[in-house]
Image (cartoon, rainbow, N blue to C red; front, side, top):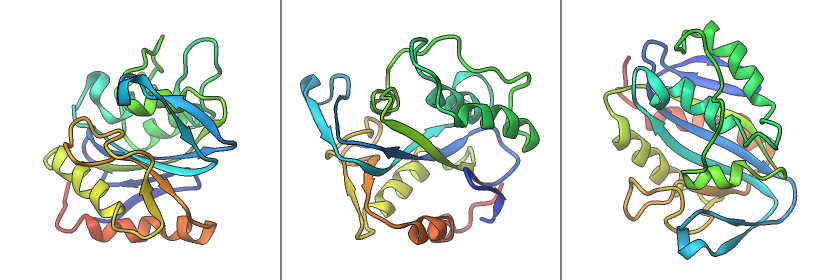
Length: 200
């Protein structure tokens, strides 16, 4: 599967479908304590400064579980906190690459639901890069495969075992990445071979 679009903040494989899986690169500017909903009975977990990857999926061709709407939701915060700066870039880019629906609007409000929501809500956290794999057929299986591949890399470790993977028993989809800028620059090329035979 080839990269269809890439810039400083977005990398997209595939171009025809409205659903697929995605990875969010999050940068935490300072150590924080975060409660991830009911995970570990609501206990606040230490989150070190640094970079993280979250692997998720949004497989519908329309509505709130399409890729565009899910990613806009992730880039939004509750009304009292400004959205992530990448949200405006999404509103500009997604129509250009055919990621809808149109007109594209961010959610009016956001209820914290997924584990990553609680991290994205923190003002010390910045959504810096989005990786999209537009594919409806493989769905959750591809999400699981990508998350488990990432865990084989020596500089990636779970933030907490089981975090972010309610649909993947035994997996972890919220990962700490100890890597330099060269590693991140090469990351799309490193991820592409995990998607063999995927055509859209």
